[in-house]
Image (cartoon, rainbow, N blue to C red):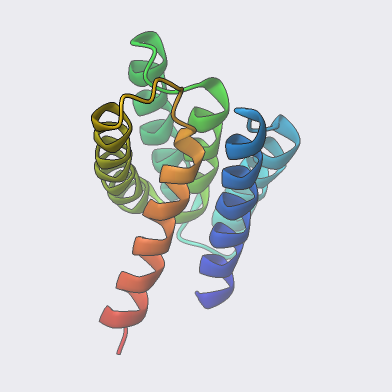
Length: 140
């Protein structure tokens, strides 16, 4: 399980970096990982349905958020990739923590009268870090 968590941190860390630098998360980072998550779940994980549920929950949240203009397409694909690997409960936890981080960050920017877009990939990375820390603390 630790290698899975390390993969999630590497993926989200890379996507956070590219999102912060360019406000873009490349498909080359998300799509292969999404497919890999489904293959993992189908062969070694909890079954293809587990990965599909995570992917679909991440995708539904993605569709709702993108239609309201809250996050970009790369953020949504990143959530779908995480869901394919971790299942629906983990992707919901990561997203919830990401929204809290993003809300605090945005309020800080507004308080300082800074008007710039928020690279949500950084917030997703924060959510992934919290997930890993919770796993480490609760697995003891």
